[in-house]
Amino acid sequence: MKKDTSPPSALTDLVERYQLVQGEPCSACGCQLYRTNMYQWPQPVCVRCFPGRGYHEWSDQVDALFPKQRT
Image (cartoon, rainbow, N blue to C red):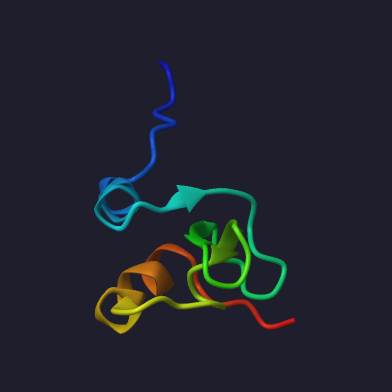
């Protein structure tokens, strides 16, 4: 039997709705979701460490998918 390796639908919904990119876990918090921050530098930044406008409305979903890590 083949194991299902597709991402959870909640993750897919977040990525599509907020135009995010999934990558390696953030070294500071463990989140795997990134967004482009064109104001400071044109590269992906962690959505939890560098929250954008409106992040508070869906931060619980990110926390459920990627529990916060303490370093």
